[in-house]
Structures are given as C-alpha cells and as structure tokens.
Length: 339
Ligand code: TXA
Ligand code: MG
Image 1 (cartoon, rainbow, N blue to C red):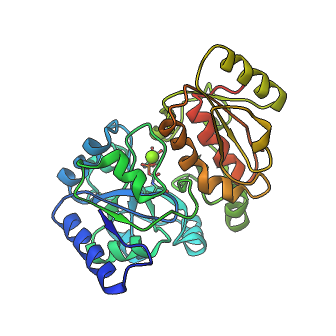
Image 2: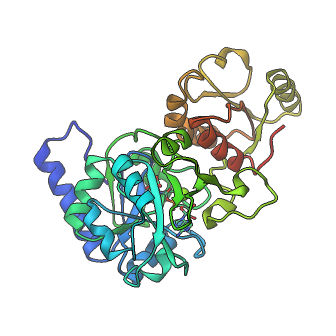
C-alpha cells in the first residue's frame, strides 16, 4: 500500500510508481488513482493478467474493461481505425474523463472486451496514472478498483477496504477529482452513441462533434443496455436504498422507518442537511455545485455501510449536465426505483 500523495518526496514517489509498473509488466494487477475513480490495472495484451482483474473484483466475465493509455500513438496497437469524430473528441478531451469505443485489433486480450469486436479506450488525466502507464510501456486494462457491485473507490483507503490481500499493490494518490467514472461513447457508429454518462457531459461533447445519440436504455428501463456493465445493479449500500423526489415525502418515509425501529440514513446536500432527523445524515456536496456532489457521491454511499444504516433515503438531482451522471449512479444504487 504505497502512498504517492504530494506530501512524499518526489524520488520516493517515482520509485513506488516504478515498482507498480514492474508488477504490471510481470502480469500482476495494481490499483492506481485516475482523475475519475481508482482503477485496477493489468497488461491489456496478456490474457492471464487480465483474468486476475476479474478474479480480484468478482466481476462477471461478460463485462468488458476500459484500456488506458498514456499516448495516442498506443492506439495503433489496440484499434483498427480512428474515425474522424473520434479524432476530434480525442484532441479535445484527452487526457480526461471520456472513454471512446472503437473497432478492436486481435492483439487485445479476449477477456478485456468480453468477446466483443470493439474495445473501450481512454487516457486518464492524472499524473500518477500517466507516469505508471508510461513506465509499464503497455496498454493497461482497468475497471474501477472496487468489489463488483460496490461504489467505485475515490480514495486509496476505499481500495484497501475492498481489495486488500487480493492484489499486488495499491498506489495511493489521495482523493480523486471528478469522483464519477468516465463518460463511455461508442464511436463505431455513424453518429456517436452515449452508453454511460460520466465526467464529460453531453453538452461538452456535442459542442465538439454536434448532436449525439443516447442509448435508449438510459431513458427507458424496458430497453437492454448496449454496454454490458450498465445492466448490473451497482454502487449499492448494504442497507436498502430509496430515491425520493419530494422532500415532504422523504421526511414522512423517514419517520415511518424510524417508527418501525430501523437504523435510518439520509443522503442529502449542504443546503438541506439540517432538515432531517435520521441516525446517519450524510451530505454529499452543494446542490448549486454539482461537481462537489459528483466528487463526494461514492464516499458518501460508503459511509452508510460504515455506520450500518438499514434503510437509506436519498434526495434526487436535476437530470441535466453532471446531474445526468449523478442520477444514473443513484438510480443504479436504488435498483431503478424512484419514489
Ligand atoms: O472512469 C473510468 O472509466 C474508470 C477509471 C478506472 O478509468 N473505469 C471504469 O471502468 O469505470 P468500469 O469497468 O467500471 O466500467 C467500464 C464500462 C462498463 O460499463 C463496460 O460495460 C463498458 O465500460 N465497456 C467497456 N468496453 C466496452 C465495449 N467494448 N462496448 C460497450 N461497453 C463497454
Ligand atoms: Mg465499475
């Protein structure tokens, strides 16, 4: 468990990152910080190494991974071609929280793409991640470094909590910035299709390439997601998690749960935190600054487990800009139910 946060001297940090890169070269898995969430990385060109990621996380094998690179020149060993729209997006967003799906080359390990003929690629905007990727010298397949189904980790401690004893090393770079995963966009179609809302917003993407499409499953629960990972329940605290749109209703449901003797929780915001009487009240940020909410969302969800809340009621957020990604994660945590 190596801490590479800024208070360590530079040479020591360099050594930790080099050691982690060595593990990756040897076919082991290593957790590392990115600007979105922590990733659990292995050599994307080595089948046996990638399999270890799925084992460590308990991840279903039909859920493909994102391949991380430090330089666009690495694209040529991963994908057949980079269409013009993808090139524009790469120029504008990389390094950054946009993952692009392209037609894959044979060299990519089979389990990275879960048998699909496409591969998801991104360049993370984090100095530790970029240095690790450069030192490793290979493309690195990495899902979020949580146990499958749990909230993604936004600190080294979260990774340690979930994966200690299951992986070779953790590079601890402190708290991540964005706090939600990257946006996943399929660029193999004529018009790009959004599979997962994330750190890069639809507005930002459309400003570069014009109108995009949205996977119908993001709008209607009846549709099957194009992206395998989006069909799983995810991010859920151990207690039952209920999204409530109306504040009065939330207060009423809370009172009922309390009366029934349950240990209650509320996920709220700075503006509203004094309005609830629950056993565990967690504010995930400021309503008028959705970036702060994204930044603290997963950490907040994890708190309910630490405090052993049995039933948790959560406020909702406007379905626009970053709120789209925030609501997508909250809906997944709630198993799709909004009251
Ligand atoms: O911010 C992030 O993207 C983080 C950091 C570590 O980079 N990674 C991450 O990975 O969130 P993961 O594995 O938790 O989510 C990857 C998502 C899944 O929903 C997966 O199904 C989808 O991307 N995906 C990957 N490859 C795909 C492909 N070829 N076609 C469709 N969906 C794909
Ligand atoms: Mg994940």
